[in-house]
Image 1 (cartoon, rainbow, N blue to C red):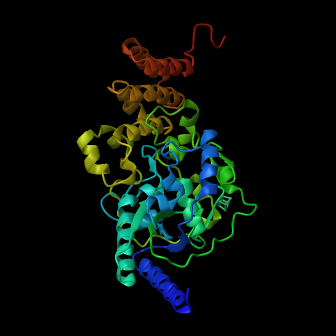
Image 2: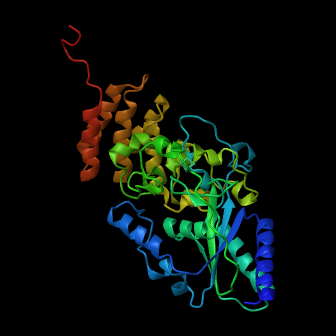
Image 3: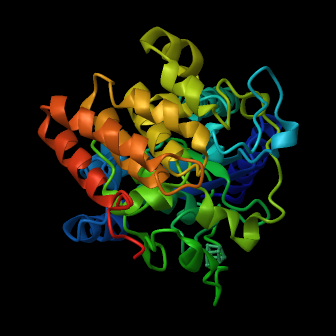
Amino acid sequence: MSMTATAVRDQLKAELKAYAAALGVTALGVTTAEPFEAEAGILRERRRAGLTSRFEPETPTARRDPRELLPGARSIVAVGVAYHARPSRLRGPEAGGSGSPLRGWLSRYAWGEDYHRVLHRILARLIVFLEARASRSLRAVAWVDTGPLIERAVARRAGLGWIGKHGCLIVPGAGSYVFLGEIVTDLELKPDRPVPDGCGSCNRCTEACPTRAIVFPGVVDARRCLAEVSQWRQPVPEALRRPMARRLFGCDTCQEVCPYNRHAPETVLAEFLTPPAPPRPDLAELLRLDGSGFRTRWARSAAGWRGKKVLQRNAVIALGNSGDPAALPLLLACLDDRRPQIRGHAAWALARLAGVPGVDAGQVRRALGRALEVERERWARAEILMALDRLPRPAGPGDGD
Ligand code: SF4
């Protein structure tokens, strides 16, 4: 390639970075469209060990080799968009929410508008920009959320940052509260260099994880990761219900303790500052929502995609973990829900709440006894039996002699 062509290529990348920054992109890097063989191998190993996310598809060739996705692909443009926002900066009717124990928690990434839509809009504008500068029609495909390993591997190879021990990409100067997206294109752009790992001897995320899910540096056991478990459609394993605390969707603990997030810049995008749903949802209100109410309130939120039952199931667990006697009538009502998952988790939550001062354990025992008489669903019945077993024993004649 002549010096002139190289200079043109560098100039185009510099212009792209400036344009992306004006759109709210925090970091942009470029890598080649070479396959991700090593990463695909690691993913296969993790899958064999049962550590990978249920939301991660099997590894089709297209994820391993970008050229299978886009024949003739030469470059991948990787972008990182900061979504971090202090609660005090949120605006709009849903921005409120106190620290009341009868409110749940959403992970920060779900506070704003669904990031898939926001990032796809940005990536589409970047493609238009590149086409205009290249003076030809480009072959280009945009990706958002293509699976953690490959997506982070693309970003790492494009020089956006390194993969921290918690498995998230850390962008120097911007931390890990960053959404990732990519454009695969047949346009040749100068690749960036990967940045060195900055975790060093720090282990804060590994130590802070409530379920000890970080099993090796950069390897998270998805079967225990609350960010993952809180999105499962099947029941939450009993051992993970207490650690879930009042998490309704996602978990930020490993990122909150990371020193690189201490001074993370805040998002500049209005979409992430105007929550479509409350970041600290009122649990009673969430449980009252019917199908159309849920769609109206949660359709634009990234937390809405798993549906009403998952969030309401987590709300039941959160009430059990609230330590607030005011949760009692809400949970008693859940024993009559038509969905076995809600009834079964409510039984667990009631047994947990029964130990809270101000809660009548006898009332809980009687309610669970009545529920057992009419329960026909096997899993929910087993949950009620276990809940009855966990209740504080009533004082009997001779106790205290
Ligand atoms: Fe790395 Fe420490 Fe951040 Fe974990 S908390 S990702 S070990 S810097």
